[in-house]
Structures are given as C-alpha cells and as structure tokens.
Image (cartoon, rainbow, N blue to C red):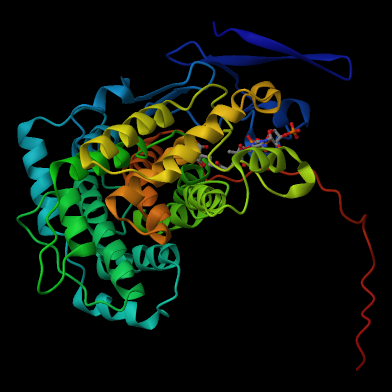
Length: 428
Ligand code: SDX
C-alpha cells in the first residue's frame, strides 16, 4: 500500500499518495487532487513541482551531486568522450564498441546539411545572433527530413539523434562563418566530433585548423558537463513542446530558444561581460559584488546561484579545475580567470551569498575555457546548446516512450475581470 499524506480541506480529509525516487526523494502525487478536492496547486517557476518521473539524470542540490544514468559526472573528467556520454544519456547505458562505432559513423556520414539549407544562412544579417540562427535552422531540418518527423518509432531514434547531434555542429559553425563573412568549411569525415566542429569553425580554405589534444579534451569535457541537467528551463521546454507529439527537430529548436535567456544558458556570455567590465577597470570586484547585492541595481553576480544547487555546482568545480589545467598546459594566462577566482573568494566570504546559498554554477568558469579555446563570446551559448542537445533528445524520447505521457497543460488562478458586458467603443 503506497504511503500517503493527509490533506484537510473544509473539514474533510483527503489522502494523497507519496511517490519515492531511487535516492529516497519523495513527492506528493496530486494527479487526483482537483478531481477529489476541486483545488489546484500554485507554484510560480515550478520550484516545488515535479513535472515527471525520469531515469536520465539525478541531481542532489544540497550535496552538489550530478549523475548521468547513475554515473557521477566527475568520472568523465579524465577520459572525456562527448559522443559516448550522448549515447549513455539517450539509450540509458554506455555504448559497446559496435554501438559506438555505428553511432560515430552515422555522425560522420550525416554531418553535411542540404545544400539548399546552406543558402538560408545568407538570408540572415551578418549581425544575427547565432542562437536565433541555430533555433531557426534546427527547425528547418524537419523540412529536409520528413521521414524523421514521426514521434512514435523508437527504431528511428538512433538515426534521428545522430543526424541532429551531427548537424547542430555544422549549423553552429556555418552561423559563425556567416557572422564573420567567411566561406563555410565543409565537415571533414576524417575528424572526430569535436575536432570536426572546430575545423568547420576555424579552418580556412588555404589553412587547416589543427586541434591539439588539450583543446579536444577540454571541449569534450565542457560539452559533457552541459549534456543534461534534469528538468531545467530548456529541457522542460523541450518536454512541453514534445508533449503535443511535435517532432524532435521542432522540440529541440524550442529548447534552443529557452536556453538563450540570460538567466539560463545565456549567463555564460553575461559572466564574461561581467569579468571584462571589471578587467577594464570600470569596476572593482568588490564594487561589483556590492552592486549584485543591491536589489535596485538590477545587477546579479552572473554565474552564481542556482534553483537546485544550494551547494557548489559540481560542474563548476570540474570546470574550475579544467580551466587551471588548460591554462597550465597551454602555458597561457587569462586575467579574467584571476578576476573570477577573486569574485568567488569575495562572494563566498559574504553573508549575503552564504545565507542564500549562492555558489558558482556551470556558467561561472565555462566562459574562460571557451575563450582559451578561441570560441568567440557570441558563440558561448551555442556551445551550451551543442552540449545540451543529447539531454534534450533523451528527455523527448523518454517522454514519448512513457505510457503515462499526456500533453502538458498547467492550470492557473484567474485574477482578471469578473463577467463583463461587451460594449464596443468603436464608431461605425
Ligand atoms: C543555468 O536549472 C538548471 O539546471 C539550469 C542550468 C542547466 O544546466 O540547465 O544549471 C544552467 O541556467 C545556470 C544558471 C545560470 N544563470 C545565472 O548564473 C544568472 C544568475 N543567477 C540568478 O539569476 C539565479 O541564481 C538563478 C536564475 C540561477 C536562480 O534563480 P531562482 O532560483 O529563481 O533564485 P531567486 O531569483 O529566487 O533568488 C533567491 C535570492 C534572491 O534574493 P532575495 O529575494 O532572497 O533577497 O537570491 C538572490 C535573489 O535576488 N540571488 C542573487 C543571485 N541569484 C539569486 N543575488 C545576486 N546574484 C545572483 N546571481
């Protein structure tokens, strides 16, 4: 018999079942709440509301734990392979040699986009934000792959996932090349996932970009750390859109749109702007932290705080280590990293941040790593989207495979006018 909680409404008692997860987290199942009590719940931002049961990613915000299909993300640090982790998230287990070879071959063979899609990039102004192009062009893929617009064929999942994970690189690189007025560089079938992307970004017709192992490992790890994060804003958006049985392309295009926001994936750009602001002497780290604490300033310490983590974001810990290692191996120094460390030191000694349990999140150190690799700031959130795509696909597929999946349609509490008569103010 399921454990229950008792709700008392107008003197009547209702018993609502409790649901328990793998790690002991518990939820009140309110599926029958309105039918039995006439009441709904109200939870702006869904801070206390579970939208689904999922087996993909586990986060313990208090302990600073993040696991992909049970594997702690720290365990990917010394052997980062984004394609392997993408398979793990989507199919629920690590790929064996044959699965990995088949998936890698599909990624290589489907990296090109239709030539007529290439001309679409000319339709955007050179100043177009790459995230706008990315969302539009991922949606456009559904026009070129009608065979993959079905949502109820699990046998198609491997093929459509490979196409999307492969082509997002090409679209991203072409958006970058367009913004710089450069000719596109076609994918090179000899190159692996990350190096092929960097080739399409930075090679010239007269000069091949050579990706060293340090850069390849750093970008593989950065993509892995962004690959999934349970029901974050963009993943919940993908689930919401996918719940209407919209195809994978358009569902992921909506994820790109949600990720673009400065409070979500757009924060990595805001962090670099903040660090540059300080580096250019317009403000000291201490002054910036002080402004971030003032509600009236409209400023926040970008890259700090998290809806779920009330401890260090484990990704920030790994990314900080990665940044230090990368600069050491590259024999480089970035003053912005020093400023980031200084801001972290000041904030973590300040009761405002400590009381609110505000710690560095995934965006706080990712930007300095991307800068070291040579990725321009306007592509930072695009890199986040490339990383998060396997997570979006995994959640879209998990929802479609669920026997209890329903179209998402939240309720509301109405606070508008009472019934009012229609009296037009228009003449004639
Ligand atoms: C991502 O959900 C995910 O998993 C997201 C993500 C993923 O992988 O998908 O982890 C990726 O989006 C990371 C977050 C990136 N965004 C930022 O770094 C922007 C800066 N951070 C904040 O805007 C904020 O912390 C959020 C948006 C991340 C979380 O917002 P919440 O949970 O709604 O927190 P809140 O706004 O209710 O803040 C609680 C208090 C408030 O103060 P009080 O009203 O209690 O006095 O903390 C304050 C806030 O003003 N606060 C901050 C702050 N973050 C929260 N104050 C200063 N600087 C900050 N960064």
